[in-house]
Each structure stands twice: as C-alpha cells, then as structure tokens.
Length: 290
Image (tube, rainbow, N blue to C red; front, side):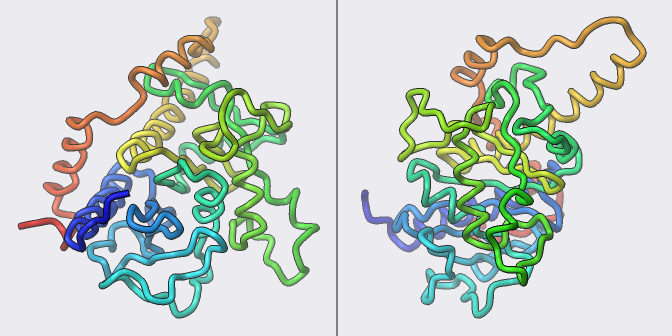
C-alpha cells in the first residue's frame, strides 16, 4: 500500500465529512446513525464520528478506533478528537466487528431510518424488504435480521438490553449474521469468509439497518437506496390493499444482474450529492479546499 501524505489523508477525511452531510440530507441518518471508513494508511483502525451528522464539520469531530477490539486509538491522527471515555450511546462496535471479520470492507453505514425500521419488525431470520426496483438488486431475496435479544443471556445482568450494539460480543454476533443464509445457517456460496460478507445489508430489530461497501461512495449509494426501496415497497403494499393486482418484485436473476451492473455510485451521482449538500447551506466541511 502506498504511503499517503498527511494532506492526502485530510482529503480522505473530507470525503467522510461530506458523506455524513449527504446521508443527513437524504434522511438516512439524523441525530442518530453514522458512517465510518477504514483508515487507508493503517487498516487496523477506522474513522467515524459520534456526533450528529449535521454537526460534523472538521477533524475535531472525528474519532479513530481500533478494528481488533473497538477501543479508541490513544494517539489519533492529527486533529482528530481523542476519546477519553466511550459515549454511552456509541455503537462503534457495529463498525469495528464488521471491519475485523471482513478485511475487504472499506466503509460501513448504520442508520436509524424510520422508513426502513419497519422491515426488520418481524419474528423471522430475514427481512420483509424485497428488491422493488432496479436500484435495489443488491438487497437480494430478503436481507437478514439481527435480533440482539437472542444474545442477551450470554451478557452480564448489568448490560442494558436496549437493542443497541454497545459491546464487542453483540458487534461480533451482528458481523457473523451478515454471512448467514436465509435459514440462519452459515453458507460460503463462493465468497471468502475472510474477505466480504454474504449480504450487503442487515436489519436490526427495532433499531435500523447497516450496510457496507468497498468504498465510501458505494456505501452511501446503498444506504440511500435501502431507504428509497423501503418507501417504494411501503407505497406498493398500501396500493395493493385497494387492488386485486399482485406486487411483482425483481426476480433473482434481475436482482443479481442489477447488483452486478448498475448498483453502484457513479462519479456524476457522487458529485451531484456533494454539490446539493454544499449548496443547501446546512453543512460545513472545513477540510474542503476553498
């Protein structure tokens, strides 16, 4: 891996700040939720922010964490905030555990988007959300649901049962669930368990969803289209209640081909999202060149 100069890493973190703003503008994250990115200079650490997205504007709002155990980096990258004590509502273990389990993952987004939460509210291993349109093929046939209540018995009584992924044990369990088949069994399916998850999105009961990608741009793209697909399916189900016609979701082949060919962020799309956030007047990115 080529060594990045300090100003190059600043540029990299500027993109992370912009991603927070784009996700906020698209109502994927609000005062809750976050995006993280694996450190390109040191893949054993990652950057994110515990602050609400609209308040993220500089390196002083970003934190650096260890992938191995989710502990804060003692001497973070110059200008980043040093974590003296882990925030009570921090869910960085969601990120650290996925990065540790899957070295090929480069960016992760955790969302509390209300439009999508409803699709994880079922007593099943898999979500009710289906790929409803061509930009949602990456969802596959029913993404898995992570239910933390199945793991509470292994935690000490003092551990709050508040549905948050607030310890390494729950983070590791969620990371493993990203690789399970529809019946809850572990499957290889030609994908290396040491590289990337089997599923690109996982729902969390009564909580939200998490997506990953091999770039910041594609992670943002997927997170936005989970929300859009949820809106479309909800509207379709409501329309179905007044009609005798059935809803037709993407076939398995259509979903795979959409995922392979068009389910990714283009340069123009990322530029459009960036410009829209900048011109809204709601956000500041002090790392962007003036």
